[in-house]
Image 1 (tube, rainbow, N blue to C red):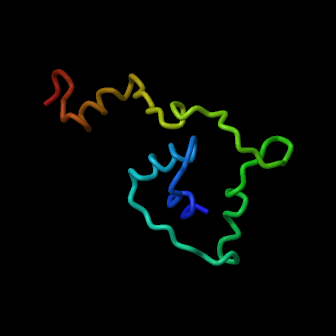
Image 2: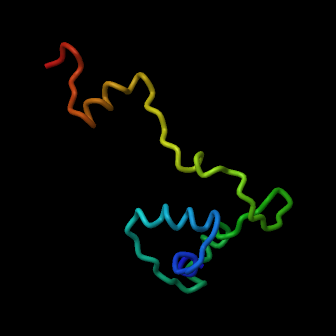
Length: 91
């Protein structure tokens, strides 16, 4: 199903947005026999509270793709790790 979605020549809506997101990553899709892949079978289905399949887009893409903010107690560590900026007074 993932190969079909990625190779779909005319995706629309949520599928198109997910294809754009997935294009940022390098990965290989490997087909597995159904017997070897039964543990992920439940993950391939979307269900609502009644057990029927649902395909609505309740979660906005902005929420899915949002970046986490850095807690204030870790900002100095983040500054050092990303900018090699030491704390004032640190050697």
